[in-house]
Length: 219
Image 1 (cartoon, helix red, strand yellow):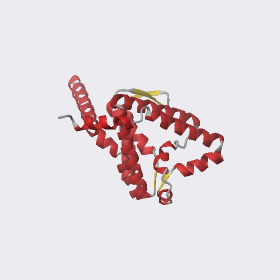
Image 2 (cartoon, rainbow, N blue to C red):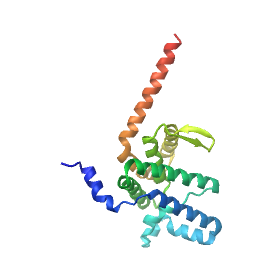
Image 3 (cartoon, rainbow, N blue to C red):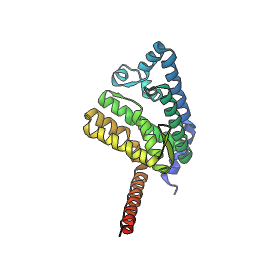
Image 4 (cartoon, rainbow, N blue to C red):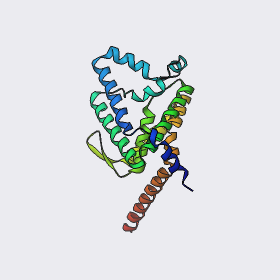
């Protein structure tokens, strides 16, 4: 009997979009350029693409997809770095998982964002993109990136810092914030719960061993 997961992947392979992250990054880049050089048209499109409950109730169902192409609201330098980072981790995840599983991971995140929008009235792709970052950190914890393009830091530590920040937002935020965070990171738990627990146990064991070694050396 074939494993269900592999049988499902075989059936869905024909529908999977290869290089998905490339198209998403290009779409966000084009939108940012429009916002930058042609603000009138750019912001008109921006308002039509964002994910809002009010817009969906008006029958603007394209918002269910177009919200993933809305770029972060930031400076040119930060956008270039951010889009490159998204592309890097997205292509790495697709190479590790295959197009089918990566597409499913992203789709689950999209569905979660849509549910959050229907509950709270609005949702963005911020936590969806964050879920890609957590997935990459779980699979490549010792990969180094340059924080602020200067300071080298391992992905696992950057992920722990981000997790702590969002945990704080979950604690002090209102009900809408809590719902959005919980739903939009659901794909991380569904796909990577075991990997994250393994990473945390390994890090805990490492620091415990290091502490015991230093304690023994001081005697």
